[in-house]
Amino acid sequence: MDESADRLAARLAPALALLAAVGETGHVTRAAELLGIPQPTASRRLAALADLVGAPLVLPSGRGIRLTRAGRTLAAASGRALASMTAAAREVREEIDPGSGHVVLGFLHLLGRTLVPSLIGGFRERNPSIRFSLAQGSRQDMLDALRAGEIDLVFVAPMPLDDPDLVSHPLADQELVLSAPESHRLAARRRVRAADLEGEDLVTLEPGYGLRQITDDLCAAAGFEPRIAFEGQETETVRGLVAAGLGVAVLPRSDQPPAAAGMVEIPLSPPLFRTICVSWPAGDRLTPAARSFRDHVCSHHAGLGRGFRPAPAS
Image (cartoon, rainbow, N blue to C red; front, side, top):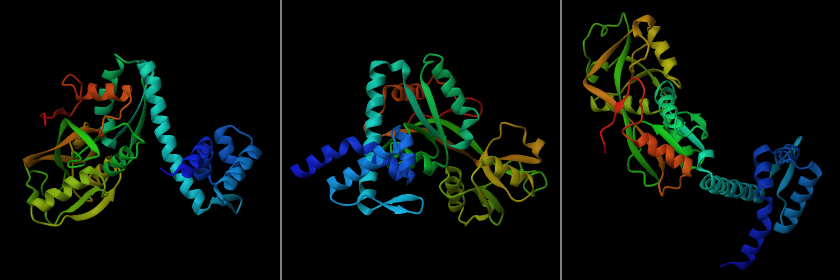
């Protein structure tokens, strides 16, 4: 054990929040405002830290400051340490009073229509004091935030298989169909095969989204490269482009009549479903509130909302 490094770390520990705030804001005054301390106090602490480390931590940069290499190293470590301490503080507080917990939940955009409200609503009937912070984004963004400890649980599809850092439980199945303009050559079909999409202009989500991965895999299994005409970040944008006659898309069934938007929805042959799962970090490092919500959504009694059916147990 390096005793000198241990002593230095112990003396640096009280300034973790200041280092992290300076790294985040790039400005002493803003960092001081975040921490609720006077700006001169923050400046003196930074100077004392530089003396302690034996190297400058910040340099002037325009109207603000920038971190030196030593400053960046310490600020990054401070952010990680504070995240761990915040999680520990939440767990201790919730162990004392489980009913006052807080769950940070991430999910795909489209799941915010029915699945997420249904699951949270059913849970809060029995746990009315537990708060939720909600984050939406692509599958990759949500999984990255989960691994970084920024989110407690995520709802994503497809399931992140073969990831030793995560545990996943299948939650719901959702049918995917071909959305096409009413005037499209495939619009009158009762069913379409993946091979029928070869050469078609496809409207899809950007790489990193689960639906994009499913679309790419579907075309690859049929033996062709998809011809991507448009990429977006929102399913509703994709639907709008399809309705405008700019291509076809593989999407979940709409909860609105597609004909009202000038579209048709055609089942795929064979039928295609995506499995939505709930994922959390391996090692069960969840707070009591997050653990309680996870157990609720994994139960067979949790309401899934319209358009979803319980997934078979894995």
